[in-house]
Length: 309
Picture 1 (cartoon, rainbow, N blue to C red):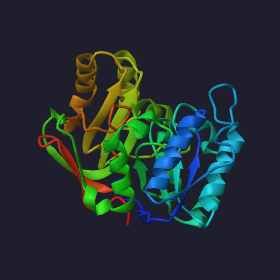
Picture 2 (tube, rainbow, N blue to C red; picture 1 turned 180 degrees about the vertical axis):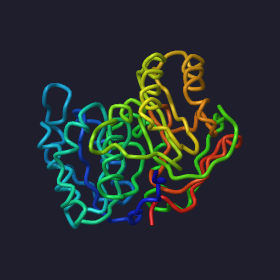
Picture 3 (cartoon, rainbow, N blue to C red; picture 1 turned 90 degrees about the vertical axis):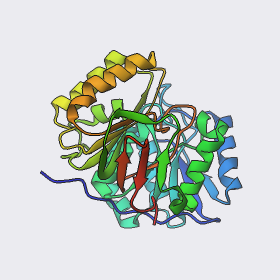
Picture 4 (cartoon, one colour; picture 1 turned 30 degrees about the vertical axis):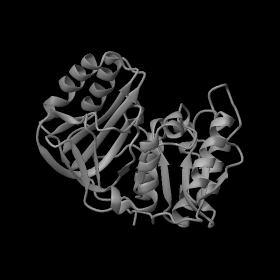
């Protein structure tokens, strides 16, 4: 069985770079989008909004599937665009993932891609279809990005000076299962990873991977179900370690914690909790597809190389 290998890292951003903002999932509140664009401009970037970002379809989608896929494809293939940042999560990335022109996007070359939550489906697609490292991080119109300075700074530093953020750690981080492990980062939103099973973008192996997991609004029994599905499908076979982020609105944390320990403790690998990424009050940026060392006892995830080249 194959072992997860490091993925190709795109180049870091520079002041003056153009970045495209796309909405592959849910509808975007215009006032939040404007505020997020102002933050990006304050960093010296030139953000452009894809044509269908403010569209609405079926009440829960930012435009129809073909339009959202076209926005992603055209933004990626624009030679003047150095990176693509998602506007928000929600629901719908899986619906448009197979409609994007991945051959054209591969031909356009590597670029920065940022998002989390529902965008987990696209992180998996970029890894499988393009062999590209991506950034699990805040989105331009997300409330946490607009309100939390540490969330903003984590993304800004990762984009411009990635060598300055080679370690992710939080005072809250502690070992759920002690130990130290080396591997290549992957993962994201638990419910999306479970939903990806059996799709064209499901990875054939997680062996040698450091799995990142977080979620929002899923009660402990639903977290149990998603983890059990991953376990039964063999998706966690060979995982080297697990880093857990936030579990906002998932019920009392001690119940969540007990469920996570019950399902993940049997893997026999280090597991660290509360590492500060995901839907919590702070959403630290974490690269996916990068070799790293997880130290559960120290509560850190340290990357062998900067997130971006």
